[in-house]
Length: 216
Length: 423
Image 1 (tube, rainbow over the protein chains, first blue to last red):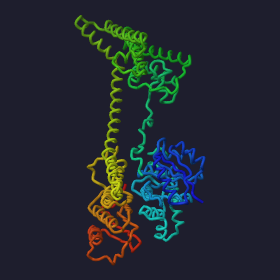
Image 2 (image 1 turned 90 degrees about the vertical axis):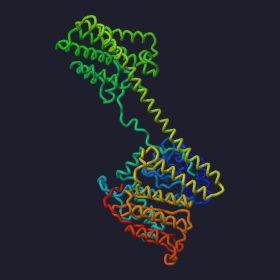
Image 3 (image 1 turned 180 degrees about the vertical axis):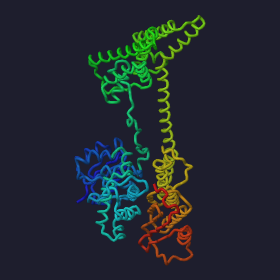
Image 4 (image 1 turned 45 degrees about the vertical axis):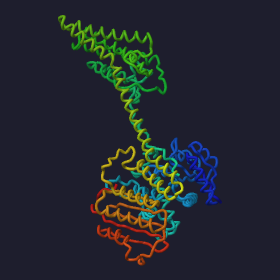
């Protein structure tokens, strides 16, 4: 069954482009609706109950984070994938911490976008190389860092670190699995676990990036 | 595709409300709303604040002085969220306390001998006059008229306002005159001088609201000017960069490679300006020595420009550039150039990580790959400029490639200064 996708972006041109791309290259994805404002998005998501929402980070009236905040509590089964031109750490980390399952940049190729949508719809996380870099940076040990209050959330395991490094080096999940002699499923598990830590950890860098965007 | 170039990054809004500033009340006030403002600010009952002022007034008039200074320097609240209802009881209490304060200040002063009756009377009358005039000025501030002294002092209150201001002024003059006549033994010459002096003081005191408003308006004007300069800077930058590039792209629309090159170059430049360390609003000092992450980004950008490919670069950590790291960045640049030339792909991934003891860069493509042993010996690229450069600086190169499997070049460079900051 096709994955039902809802597009949220304040640029109509961009929505039309993504819709055309997705429609033309695959039957696995069906675009069921789109919205150009936060209000429309919240209403549309509640009404259509899509599988995946492709969410622009920068929009008037609070942007993607505001959509997440308002639409997620009522639609816990809907998965959000952030799509943005921004490379700023605070943007990326902020939407992840607001509940998005992944982050890809708008220059992503259509085929990779399809893969990312299918992947998040199956419950896995999607990290762009740059997001992997930010997370590695945030979890890096550096002298003088704040003490670790919750090792379960505030530290990455060596294996998670390896997976993130390979993601940042541009490896696909299959290539990571081959490189580390583990299954693709295990790679996905590691990435999901990193996502959970990124969302819940109180590490200084993460909460600072998030609070720079006025959401914690 | 990057259709939102016109959007400046949603910088955190100016922290307007983070530090709540004290404001004088507009409604529910007895004299100037100072006590009410303090009460709102500290979240306590206004009665206690008024009582405190009244008691302080007994200490040589400190309460009166404090009240006057706060009146001058604490601005009125811009608008009232809700008009405060004042019960009759509260108003009576306020008036009672006001009288008590005044009485205590003047009475105790007289008793203790620092003031005699005439001085006290003079001071009292002057204070009442000042209060009348300033209150009228507060009213007119509310109406936001902006013109000379008369409008500041009178507002559009019409005749009744004029009467109040004039009687206030008269009271001030009477007070000062009382004080002079009764306390100074003087001949005619001195009297003339003192009258002039007294008149000047009177005028100065009465026009305090005007001067304050002048200063505040100047501040506002400065803020407005800064804002418009900022807008002009953004507009100028977008014009010089983005609009020019868009024009070029339209001219080159027949040459996809050229369009791609222009678009990537412009994107990188705009990103640098929006989010980079020395970009818009960061106030970065361009004379700062370039750091490692910036050098990697620059090297990747140059290759992108030259070969019209996309270089996806991620850098974790950062440090100062030294000679060895400069060599490392050059080697990495050369490796990206190789990938761009020979791999036959449109995208190359570069990942650099700064650790406390070493710096590593991975350059990876999913292109044709090659058999390292089959490379003719007269080809200098990999051998000389990359491996040679790495080894001269004490680093190391590892190569993973095979025909059809892409290429990954791994560059390791130990760090000279262990423990330098990696933030």
